Image (tube, rainbow, N blue to C red; front, side, top):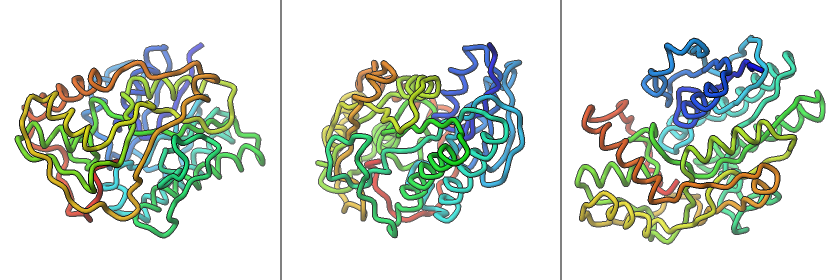
Length: 328
């Protein structure tokens, strides 16, 4: 049966991949985006599809539609963007969740809220399980994103308990792949861009902090399975294969065939020292696990950025922003 599906942030990195997956099932997909970090280019090949529509809209304002399912992905996810206007970032998570949950309540739609591994903060539990409450600085420069997402989760469960809204909450760990923005400040596009341009790779800290990277195709499959499950509580979706940022930089140098040096700068405040998902719950509830290995996914991502750099010098202009960590 064809479903009417709303994807907020649908022109963004994750959202554009999710829209494609949903269209494969012959659904009617409505993409909503304000293009702050999303891009029309990400969905340019979809605009002629008879089952695809686009609305330019900011989710901090109410939206009145008739839909069956909602994927609420709208929110800047990289520090260089979410720290540019921290008040607006918090409003996007909080007001956006209120507006989308209100819509879900009105039309009795199932809603999936995109949360984040950043709700765990700089964790004292490793790897991170869904029952860990996290360690977040509520007044730090990252709090607009971290605490905004925590509040969005709170709202989901309050709407569920008080109004019986059908909710799903996914905690997304570091994800990468084609259609990431080259200049968004996160470690994968930063390292790849530096390597392709022949620049030294920049590491903040000593490089021993860890991350776990999930390829975008695996990530959207996990998100899709969660929305179609009967499970209510948060689920980690990410790749549990952990790597230090230093080793990751060396992997990028090897895969790009370059010989850049690695240079080190001080680690920004509140930057997590370790990040690794425990995906036991995703395995058991969703029968999900990542299939694409890091080297395979990186080759696809490097190829995408190489083609991107051949056609344009940069994406959107980078605003002069506070120094942030590349290890996101």
